Length: 89
Image 1 (cartoon, helix red, strand yellow):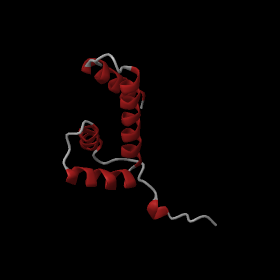
Image 2 (tube, rainbow, N blue to C red):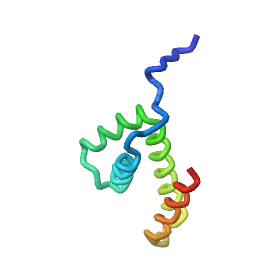
Image 3 (spheres, helix red, strand yellow):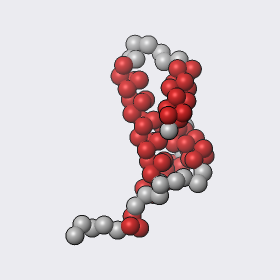
């Protein structure tokens, strides 16, 4: 049998999504403190919505960096893309 342990599963709902998403974005923006990064690591290990949002946001940023290397990406465009993704969820 696999090493299946239900206590190691991530929770499927985040009780404070807006606060968590702000923390995730501040870390990706490089604005967070070391303590915040430790909080993020714990959060990603325990919370599926935060885990998914973090990796989606990171992937979007990575794509934008590679595809828009010679152009500055307007913050309005980034915000618009984020908003559309949130609407889809």
